[in-house]
Image (cartoon, rainbow, N blue to C red; front, side, top):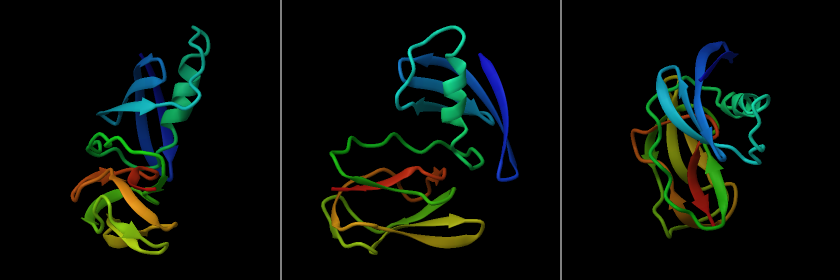
Length: 146
């Protein structure tokens, strides 16, 4: 178990790496547990196994809240992600719905302001990864558009 302390955008985070299996790291951020999937996970070695995990965990720039629910399996497509940490107050689309670039797909409340999350490409919503009331971090998947 390895502990890291980060300051991101003025917020303090304590990140505990509980363990790594394959490309999945079991971490605790400010007391909330997460499973972090790492891209290009390095081959484990005693000297370097913890450093890449710390880099993967340092990416979120938000206070840890309740973890978002597990994402549904999604086909190929473009992920629309949260531009900032906050709480989902509206999901404006349904799976199978056609959207155009610029269409609102969800609304997130952050710092007492509501922000529209819009599709940046036209297509069909193939997956919805959040529900109303979910707390999400910056970069969290909101919907996938195929």
